[in-house]
Amino acid sequence: MARARVRVEPEGFELEVRPGETVFEAALRAGVSWPTICYGQARCTACALRVVAGHQNLGPPGQVEQGVLRQITGRRRQWSTRDTRLACRLTVAGDVTVEKKGAKPAKATPPEESEE
Image (cartoon, rainbow, N blue to C red; front, top):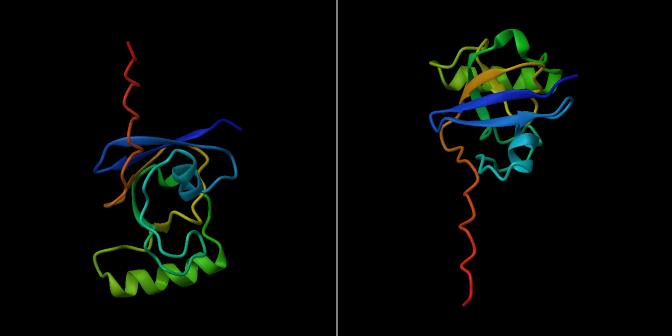
């Protein structure tokens, strides 16, 4: 199975997601700063994202995620159940574009200064 790419807006960076890996796990592996409080326990909802494109490539939500998504979409009326997912539970099988405010790409490390 090929790796999938997740484009994260509004920052405009991409994550490479391995088969079976969640979007949140891929973000951590890549050094991305992704909002969370519970670090993947599907409790805090801080990692929730909005799917913009590629719905056909989303893994199905499990029972725990479905319950949390009902709570989120009940509180955030502008979020639809079709487009809302938890990054800590979301797996993808192909390219997807998501919106996640607060997600920041890893900072590039500055080149080391040469000592003369």
